[in-house]
Image: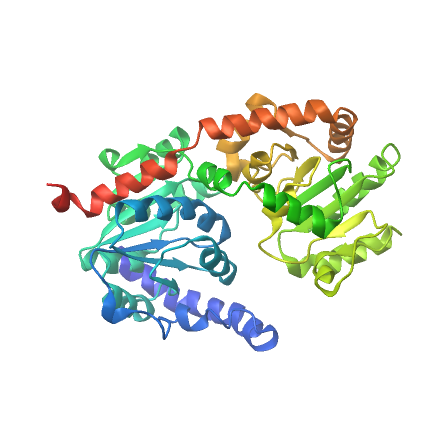
Length: 437
């Protein structure tokens, strides 16, 4: 009965909203055109339907962040199950791009259909997964119902419940509890996330704390060759002072530029690298730079045509999928998504390079990494723009101390790795008990 009302709601209210949101973007911008067929329940023409070797394991990671968490899990799972069929789905095109370039030895990549029975059920019927794994927390009632109806085992991996989401979930607890009852294993990031999923109605005997697989993902990507590539593109070396602002959102670009102007009074050769979370905000950043009468920035994509940074002290990253690489050249990192109420962004990527990180008051979506790194001094909160400028200035005045704190963060990160391997073993145990008996 609950699912009946859910479907009534999404068909009468959800469908028009979805159409109104997607249609203009597809028609006028071409956005989502690559994922449209998949979202409507069509598998790729190259999908190897006739050669799916069982067991079939289907992993789902909605977007880039979840794909990052998934990559080391798939790597470890493949070691345990070299002959299994592994399928990876994403909900976004950027997530799909990240998945296809960072996850190897997968039989197929697909898009997750919109959660309407007419789109979801045909895909489930064609894949018939033995195990379905959701990364982090994404509850789709029709998907879960269809999977369970076909006998699939369902697991939630790297599970976390954000501070912002938890109150909303609790408002619909009776409905959620029924959905969570369909999930066979909850592998949670932290004790806080475990308690929250239990409060939401998950069966206690199915819930355990495993840790954050993003710790493993960050360590895996470390490479001196990557550092040299980034230095070449940005035309910097180890003697340059670089302030990297990563994954910035509207409302933060301007704050970062104002802080940069203040910092240049004490550090005239300071180089600012701005990497917006969404590249479509690049025009507004250019406008903000022009309004402040700053020099024209070096735009990363222009490097491909032979341009160099030259004397410009501002670099604007207008490409996707490269942020981790450019963290390697930073002296100090300011993490975006935290000075506006967005929940923060992943501070582990700069930490793996041994960088000191500053963030704003909104880091609730990454509280485990935040708490771990602030405890050793590798990351620090700045409550506002003024405090940020003071903190960054102090860090630039004593680069050796900042590097020491960054190194402590990297060491702490290494000590907390290993959850991907544990997760893979637990998932393997779910799908293959008969093989081990």
